[in-house]
Length: 274
Image 1 (tube, rainbow, N blue to C red):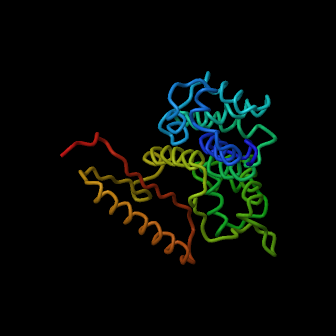
Image 2: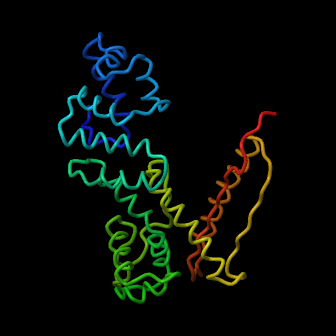
Image 3: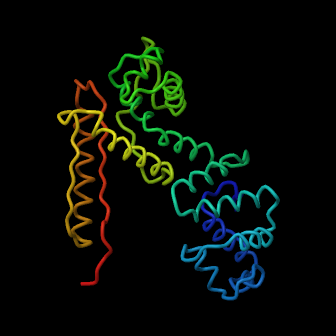
């Protein structure tokens, strides 16, 4: 079984731990865990690893003792639980930061890099800008090309991050250019990273109302009643449109500005029984 520091989901860690011990000792059971950790029902462990039940601070400590975790492993386990059980984005962000501060964390390279890329809205803006903007190292001017303007230090950080991630590189003439046509979050990007980007994008959308004249922005909405089947159909249409929009952009030889497209679909009422 891998070290606890390779996990970002405490439920997966507990499930793997159980499977490993069960394979070694047939008598190892949910009832045995319940007796050692201190909850009455053996089925409660199943509810924990399936996400139907959370664990308290007291149970975190008891689990750490039962699992025979060392001090730093125990501290990481607590951060892991609090991260997975956090109710809002800010709490998740805080606990994730604590998790990546452990030098033993083996997932830090992938997750933290993805998180950092999506944490600042202007990293993706700089990435797209370098598709057509001729940049050699004037970070002050690069920052002025972004809307709203970013500082030279922020522009430099963006270039360093994008270079480190392999998203941009210098061409034969010394200009920084994109290395790929588009970047997708895919299914492996941490939800925390994507949520940060979505929140920042929503903030930009609100500010765009005053920042740009109507002819330079398009903000619209629909409010409609739908069944689950119609909702799924519309979501598929949105996916198809995103693919079509990316195709149009990738075949545009005259691009001269970076645009941010935001798509939001969410309920504004509770579900009713028909």
